[in-house]
Length: 70
Image (cartoon, rainbow, N blue to C red):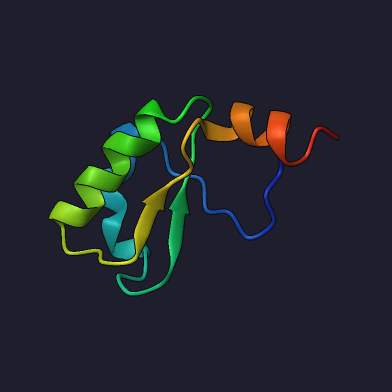
């Protein structure tokens, strides 16, 4: 649906085992199709000590509608 340069794609089910691959202090925008799974991922990451992590509200679908329809 979209290609975001620099994105590291980690499915929510794999995230707990792959947190070590991510930088805890780096600004991280988590996204999924609708924003629900990414919101769960943000909660998990914050509980694990990530401080600069945010959810793309509405997901890629909303972003495509409002920001980049191409």
